[in-house]
Image (tube, rainbow, N blue to C red; front, top):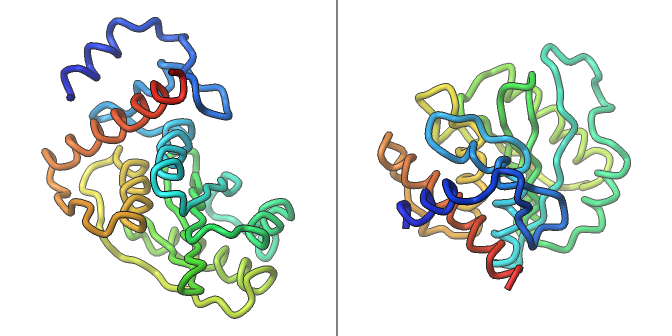
Length: 207
C-alpha cells in the first residue's frame, strides 16, 4: 500500500485538486503527510473528514490560532464556534488548535460522556494550561455541566509529529482498537495510513 501511495504521489501533478472535500486541497498540500514533516491544517481537516465519512460520529472545528503567552482570557472562543458546539449532535467534536504557528494540540468534546479532553503531545504545562482555560471557557459559556479532563499521553519524542499525534488521538476516540505503537517505525506506518485514507476517500468521492 505504501508503495502504491508513493507511486501515485510521484506521478500526479502537484497542483491537481483532490475531489470529494468541501474545501480546496491539492496534492501538494498532502506532501507533508510524509515522514519528518509537519502537518498543515488541510491534512488534519482532510483526515478528520475521512473519519466522519467512515464512522459518522465526529465533526471538526478549528479553534483560532494562538500565540503564547496569550492574555485574551475569556474571549478565545468565537461566537460562531460556540454556536456550532451548542448545535452539534455528533458524539465527538474535534477542536484542533495551532499554537505559535509551530505546534498542534487539541480539545475533544465528548457529547456522550459530557466531557472535554485537553491533549498536548509534548505534555507542556503552558500548553495544557491554555487548553484547560479554553475548555473552561467553553463549559462556562456553552456546554454547561460538562467536565474537563487532561490527557497526558501518548507523547511524541521528535519535533515534527504533533499533527500526526492529534490525528491519532482523534482516531482513537472512534476506533478503540487502534494501534498503540508509537515507535519510529509505528509512526511511519501511521503517517502512510493517514495519507492512504485521504487519497482513498478522495478516489471514492470522485468516482
